[in-house]
Amino acid sequence: MTAGETRDSGARGAAVSGGYDALLLASFGGPEGPDEIMPFLERVTAGRGIPHDRLEAVHQHYLRMGGRSPINDQNRNLLAALRAELNRRGVTIPLVLGNRNSPPFIDEALRELDTAGCRRVLAFATSQYSSYSSCRQYREDLAEALSSTGIGDRMQVAKVRPAFDRAEFVQTTVSLLAAAVSGSEREGLRVLFTTHSIPLADATASGPAAEPGEVDLYSAQHREVANAVIAGVAAVTGEEPLPWRLVYQSRSGSPRVRWLEPDINDALREEALDGTLTAVVVPIGFVSDHIEVLWDLDTDAARTASELGINLVRVPTVGTHPTFVAGLADLVQAHLAAGRDLAAGTRWAEFCAAGCCGGAHAQLPTVPAVSA
Ligand SMILES: CC1=C(CCC(=O)O)c2cc3nc(cc4[nH]c(cc5[nH]c(cc1n2)c(C)c5CCC(=O)O)c(CCC(=O)O)c4C)C(CCC(=O)O)=C3C
Ligand SMILES: [Fe+2]
Image (spheres, rainbow, N blue to C red):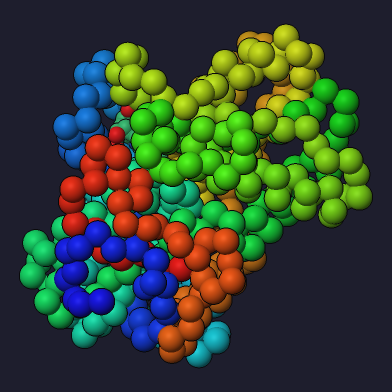
């Protein structure tokens, strides 16, 4: 693999760890003050056909949440926890945050690592699943930053493939859900796993489903996490597996474009008709309690539930849970160690193949993916 590679390459035949000297946490970004809201929203939606009304509404959500998103603080806290854990293990590589839509931007993060002399950077995204927005766009943004800064001729960056099935993510969610349902009445209780809706075309472009009856890989990966979490909770509590379904949130875009459904608010209406008394909402699409969680779930969905007389229990995201942080430290250490093929023997050995998640977007250069 040559530095600054512009070919669309993937984990296939390239899933080799070893020799990394820095970690870049790649994330979505969010405004940290009222003046940053509109520039942020314009960056997020540039060229995406999001109606102006929707932008105005989202602007208001941010203002009503205090004009500031907690996402950057949460990512800095995650890096601080990871740094402490790695230091405890004698590992002291630079760890930096790089955002797609707000400072600190990905190119600034790469400049900082370049100045520190780093040459082989492992990127890990706060998003755990396959799709254009949650994986490929990060790989494009990293490639674009390497090229626009000119750093690409001396630095290599590879992005960890979607890490949804890793034990630290699943096990932490098991602990959080088990704690949330502990001691509660099982009669009329339903678990709603929720994630960011995406356009149906992006979902289909994420890849084929693993199971019959599923239309896309993005949803299939969420179902795999949900199944594993439900089984894990049953094992921990010794009780019957909880009944569950997968729902979607935070839909935007033109109403004429199809996005993944059902929306959590529609799902709650169906649950009310079905006799559900308590909806336990598990946001497996996110790793921290940012605005999509605080607004779309704790404000919007909570209001819908209360109008319907449903008790909504919102389970925390993994955040800086010690189990999650320890697993990330394992992942980083595995990539520092020389030349192990982390994908060997797993069903994800061919992850992020050439052109994956591209759909209509597949023309731009990307950095390669590495296994987890
Ligand atoms: C898959 C996915 C993730 C999870 C993966 C990941 O974490 O990367 C995610 C996360 C997030 N999405 C966020 C915010 C927004 N997303 C928007 C718009 C969109 N999201 C999309 C997808 C995703 N989004 C898509 C397909 C669009 C349409 C525009 C487009 O095609 O790109 C808009 C525009 C206004 C609107 O219409 O809502 C906003 C404000 C925040 C920040 C929260 C904070 O500030 O705390 C976070 C973490
Ligand atoms: Fe989003």
